[in-house]
Length: 332
Ligand code: MN
Image (cartoon, rainbow, N blue to C red; front, side, top):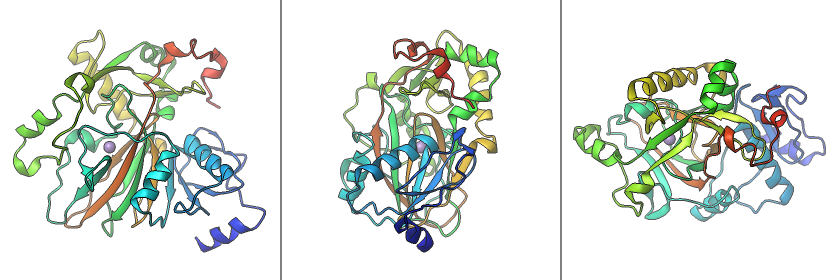
């Protein structure tokens, strides 16, 4: 880290892997921040920036470029106040509330993930899979800005899977089928389902919120496109999934389980080990994530803001966005 910060002050920053392909696209050039890719599939560690300070335009633009390219960006040793956390989060877009996630510090626009050392693991099976947060909302989150307050000595990592790469790995026939499919996502029964679990298995959910029943269920495309590049990513996964529109439950479940199994492949992944004051921003549109609940008898406490995204756009929106067929696939 020290060497990295020293390098920041010299005129020539090392550009790791420039000219190579990483996260499915050629490695961009960075002048103001140090960017070290985590794997070939997604994720980068960023050094040479103090998020407590206001950032100049060029640094901000490079952080956004790294976020768009790697989908997961990791900053270490960022001892931020709540206000500094929110200010950094606001660079990515407006903060939003989540109806189901417990809030932090009595603030509706901050959430927490907390497990006390004495508590058993209470993760519902669908969150033991790669998922996207709150896809049932009309405008699901664009990204999550999460910071670690307290973490286990070992374990409790977060893992990520690149949804663009999952989609690009499919055969042409399956891509065509998925391009025309829509998914019903619903969060209407989260509380009801939790109530049915034995008390020790229940999730810590937010008790009250201002969302209506109607807002907790929406139909979205199974393949999501980036609003500027038109690049396509898989957006059909098992959490909150009800069915594909026009398909029965059995057929729907068979296909979504198959797609979910593809997201498990290691060559789409990166995995980040948390330390106190690690801050991670991850994309919630074109990337799947999951906690790794492999620790016991230790406290894990993470706090986050959630940034609102656009209504998910699908392949049928490409024409109205003025994106041409050649531009629509950026696969090298
Ligand atoms: Mn999640």
